[in-house]
Image (cartoon, rainbow, N blue to C red):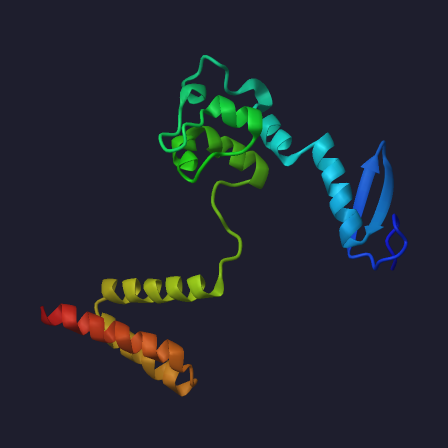
Length: 176
């Protein structure tokens, strides 16, 4: 399918606009999509959306303590965040935690992350959970040894190596 704007390049971006209950589909190439995205950003940017959501319902007035909070690292105030719709640094999440939680709940429907995680992180967390569970159970080392045998039988050698290392670590701690 060709781009609706330039009619030269292959359309890779597909937008659906709904204006006054009328749906319009746009099929754009990457270059035209970037131009269209810049136009949309100038009319109504993500920062404006976040700032508007932060101010929804007049929940935080200029007299409340949340608006007077200031990030110790970058110096951003909550009022500044409401104006620009962007946090200044990673520390802002901690500084504005109480004020951001209702905003995150409105945007995402929850304050907990339930999405995907990188595969390496998932494996690492799984190994940590296994080790923690094994330490808490009475036959911890034996439970890990059983899992090690299962991993070897299934030819999951990376998992088996991790389990072996966990068993050694537990046994060293038990000897001490």
